[in-house]
Amino acid sequence: MSASAELQDAVIAALLADATVAAAVLGRVYDEPPPASGRKFPNITIGGGDAGIEDLECITLRLESLQVDVWTRENGRKRPARELTDAVVNALHLQDLPLATHALAHLQVEAVRVMRDPDGITAHGVVTLAAEIEQR
Image 1 (cartoon, helix red, strand yellow):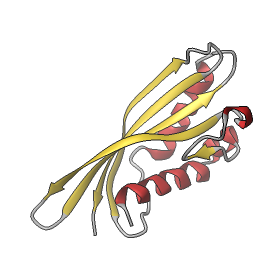
Image 2 (image 1 turned 180 degrees about the vertical axis):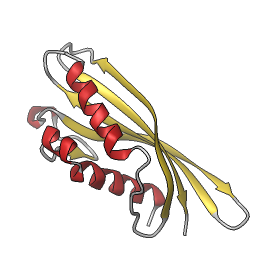
Image 3 (image 1 turned 90 degrees about the vertical axis):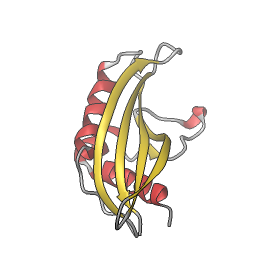
């Protein structure tokens, strides 16, 4: 299985297992958000990412970047998005998440950003993760 896919699955599972995140989003953690007409807030979506390979003496290390997007809608207020991004950070930063076939060597939050979307009523938080995965 793909190391990237395993990382995404592990991140989603960790977010859904975290009591604070789960209480805030009520299970609304998506790979792809539902259509705008049926979308409920707050929610979390898995954004883009990229990967590189580092060949070490005895292992192949995959260097992954993954974006986690947080969406709140409280008249454009950024505070709810900040609270939810902090919960995401607490659920993921330096956690040892299990992967199905590969081994997660390191996971950390690299950056957090919160902004108001152009619609004026949605706040958007971005949590950027960096992972090192030992490929097997």
